[in-house]
Image (cartoon, rainbow, N blue to C red; front, side):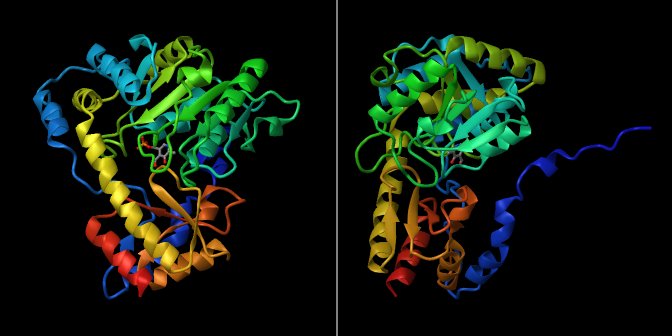
Length: 369
Ligand SMILES: Cc1ncc(COP(=O)(O)O)c(C=O)c1O
């Protein structure tokens, strides 16, 4: 007789967004309409330069390569050097991915981790780090300091600076300590650098920056998304780079699995990584929206913690986050409750800067009122 099929979804947490449906309905009933600051999804159009590049190859019928075009990999290397001062990456060590969420959800499995392995994720974290570990059957430790894992050597340590949801930035010293610890214990460090280009106060540094790793990328992976910095969330566009041997291993497995970025998207990514103006323009849009929201929140007596970078404001009224979710919903504003991001963030909510200028102004007016 066939054994009972085990549902993989049974291993995963409940989908958190389902739990704010009633808050969404309440917020949507506001006479001025819903201001949705819950999901960090871009609202500004894709730059024409990128759309032209996409269209220019839309008649090409053949399969793309999993490794991506040489032009795309060269553009990624040049962008990392130009934008973030990361030098010395071999284009062979760049691997395009179908949006970085896909990579993160699969990374522990792609790296061969299983039940005997420990994955360290930030205390307050983007939920997909946990999902990827659970899909691989690995164990999870939520910790911001590396020493928290005690005598056990983790297999994989996730970093996310600037952080989603807190906007916290990890300094060079912190990153150096993680690299030293990982090297001592044989752990891989995966740094999710999706918001590296969005800093407001001070700057953020890549794991692969020479000040952090002394130019040695062994055991290190940096994950870069084009979703936020180039408004390409709908295109599904990102890449991973760092340790050449690790990237080669990921490439090998992904080749067998057909995990290819569509060819027109590769062309769009190449264009986006080769030009910085659209990125600067987008950053300035977010900076202006952040400033308006920041002032309105402070005026309404809310406290903003961290949030020095990234696409979110991490806000508290010093009460359970579900009460704050309701407080905002009464004003027609939908936010994300902190408990989406871990058990120790129950008094915060996250506000995304990804709404139109008109909706941000409406939110500010309601907060002032
Ligand atoms: C920290 C972090 N990593 C990764 C992602 C995934 O981005 P994408 O799959 O669009 O590249 C997100 C999206 O919000 C994120 O906040």
